[in-house]
Amino acid sequence: MLKSLFKPRPAQVAGRALYGRVVEQARSPALYRDLGAPDTVEGRFELYSLHVVLLLERLRLQGDQAAETSQALFDTYVRALDDALREMGVGDLAVGKKMRKLGEAFYGRARSYLAALEALPDRTPLEALLGRTVYADAEDRSAALADYLLAQRDALAAIPTERLNAGEVTWRPA
Image 1 (cartoon, rainbow, N blue to C red):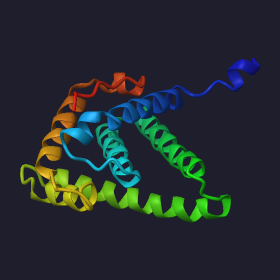
Image 2 (cartoon, helix red, strand yellow; image 1 turned 60 degrees about the vertical axis):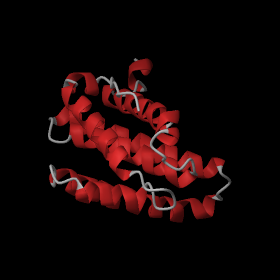
Image 3 (cartoon, one colour; image 1 turned 45 degrees about the vertical axis):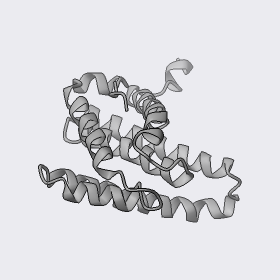
């Protein structure tokens, strides 16, 4: 009985698994080598956020289970950011302020990505957004990253929601 009391909900397990796959994909050397994403703390934040947004968009409006999985994915992402700040040596008193800034940055990007995706087939807003965020301090390769992002979005659309709710996602190679 105690075992079932402390057992995580299926959506929590799925959210953690999805985030693990986000991390694997966002760390793909091809994103940095071939697409020119900056291999910096900021560049990694942008790529992690981009992949999380793609999954959140895919799970949006797919029912209660998908909403719970989506929330668990987001919660896992936020915990990972908090852990990363602490590992980087940010003190306990400063973590809250930095997390608030990161949260604002994520929400702003999520809104902007969703608006850019809604503007498709016009890719101009998407490429401009990628140029301002991912490539802010690097050579702008936003057209290539937009191709990658749209291919990932198509791949996610082909994955049944039930698989995503089970924490299973297959990304296309970068």
